[in-house]
Image 1: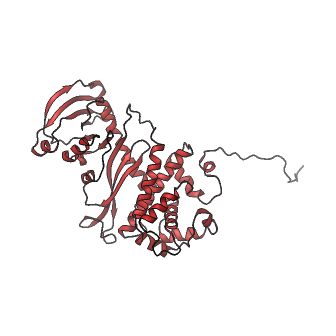
Image 2: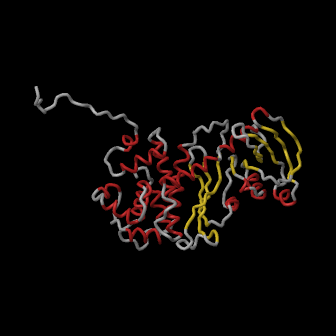
Image 3: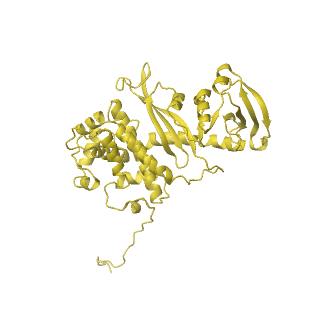
Length: 377
């Protein structure tokens, strides 16, 4: 917890009046309880309460100042503004991203590369009636813009399951010069043109019913899998009005899987093979969703209200980013999964964190000078 910027946390609490009518159990106590649940894989509020109370005096040294009670924690998750933890997670992201700015993607690009996608978290309709999705099913969606240098989420939006993925482009503020890698679900040429006019670049898969006219054909390296590299103009009634500028169309056959993919981009400068490699990196956002669903508590929730669910998700994101910050600042070679597993069993130990996370080969030294006498000579 030493790596947390407390001034940023206190600023978020003051902005949303998190301590209004709060006597003992502060917002930081709530954050520590939920962080403990994430790091040690707790299953319920009763589980959190029992394990923390077993720690006794160690809680004070870990930063706890209020008494840990499941009812108090439940009330805090229910009523305290989730935006406190959303803004704090963004503050941690602003700290983490510069630490990974020099990460090598294996591409000859200095631009920032983002992967945009969404993941659905299924819920029970009778327990979460506010999370609209289908007639017999509830769900929420986690829309994430992942910075591929370090796999740090640069933007996260939590919505109900009905919000279509492409609508998130209306919320997103494009960064000039950056690349946005997206799947076919984000094909909306009006919104893509907004990205283009903002000075950013996009790489997206084309749909099979795309109507266009070829203007030019560029030289393609077919031995590398690039079947064609074309400059096109959209000819559909709505698509031409939505995106009136030329586009670059690249047809690529993956030499490993044999699958043929068609990409659209507004960047005409970089090689066609680099465009295909960029889209391959989009899979990192899928791995990010898989990682946080497997190793953090965002599928089993400790509260049923919208505020409690968003609070838990944003604190989970904060813990993910915090572990990434620790990994970089302490120059730890282990991956995030290994760090999380070690922390789960050493949270209240007095071992220095660097020593606990370093892979030291501890050998037991047997002493030959034994006090036990030899009974059989």
